[in-house]
Image 1 (spheres, rainbow, N blue to C red):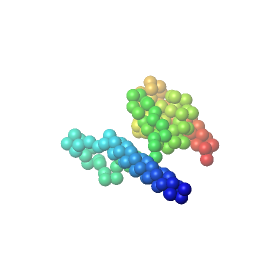
Image 2: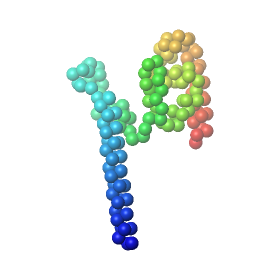
Image 3: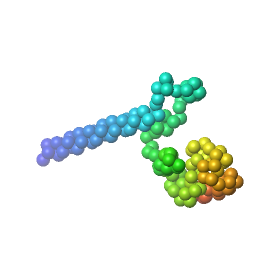
Image 4: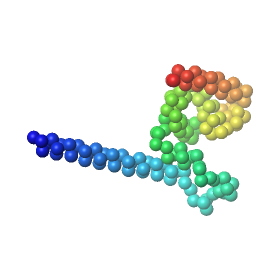
Length: 145
């Protein structure tokens, strides 16, 4: 009976090791795929893009993060990944228009007049809704603590 127990332990350990290796390979492939989406040839870059690159590119660091994307929001035909799970959940509770304003302002780096032009509303409306949405996000994120 002792020998069968040892064989069982060996088989269990072997299965665990194989699973760990498979997960490690999968994680590395996902990081590589995320990185490939951001990479482009130097010959296709404009001078402004070329001289603006850095060895510490934050986009690549975010793409390589092992933490999964919390939510991906679609705003005017663009996918915007939000990496913080709590922030992604809090954004889900905002009304769609307010969420769009927040995502365009902070993630797409658009100004209030640019957001207003896209949404076809006044820039004071965008400013007011953005500040109200930020207050709501603070309340939602404070409740999460």
